[in-house]
Image (cartoon, rainbow over the protein chains, first blue to last red):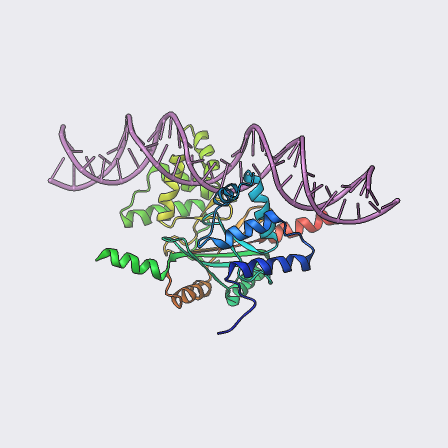
Length: 159
Length: 159
DNA sequence: CCCGTTATGTTATAAAGTAACAATTGTTAT
DNA sequence: ATAACAATTGTTACTTTATAACATAACGGG
């Protein structure tokens, strides 16, 4: 029952956290950027840029792709979201305080994502890079598979 | 000077290896598929689908995007190539015998790629997945950074 | 050789991302 | 306050990446 403040799962909490982080850093979490972050956090599964754009338009706001991509770029720079390259989607970061490479379990069937934070993996990769004199800028780990729910679902259908 | 048969670096060797693998498996490495694999292996850096298509057209062969994507799908299924999701490019697999998730060091500046094969990383991720009852289908690790050459280049330019 | 299967050709279109410039808003210095 | 500058957002147009759908051709076992 730990209230680990370094892990965020609740949209509202994530937004507050993001706001205070940006304030501390002197960067501007504008209305648009905040709204995009909110849209991402409100979604049960990661969203693509155009899905986010659709929600913005439902808001009544005008917008085109660059509107979204610029907001996403900002949020990525601030480490508030991650991009899942294998799916071209974006998901809220649960540990926005410390910059880190993303590690994800991605369900092929339902699209839900679980963010891992295994420091050993990160260190091993850093070590591999170091012994090749390779300078690491970012890491990303994406494990594709099936979540427990979807395994059960598939088994049920098999009967 | 080891002749480690499990590691392929030479295009010709890779093609022969691929051919014998497919024969053993009863899958068909057709002319087109073989040519696409050759194009990928001949390139010093990973290629995008449309770059491959350009080479095919230079060959005089007719072709459209599906031509390439279908060949790539086959090669991916056979584990003969990997896809680098962060760059939308494809690179030859150096260990096509054993199916495995890709682990790559990708140079941001020159685009060159080094394939890692760290079993501990793979095991750690499998363990993380297992304790969450997550069934792993594939893994991908992409470390973005700068290769030694490009670090030197940048430093030289800085002077 | 016939027939079902697999592979390739072809056209069209969807989806993802960016370039370039205009308009607006925020910030700073006077 | 307000001019001047910087940062953000709006807008149009376009590029790159990928797939759907259907036609044609090649292959492989009876």
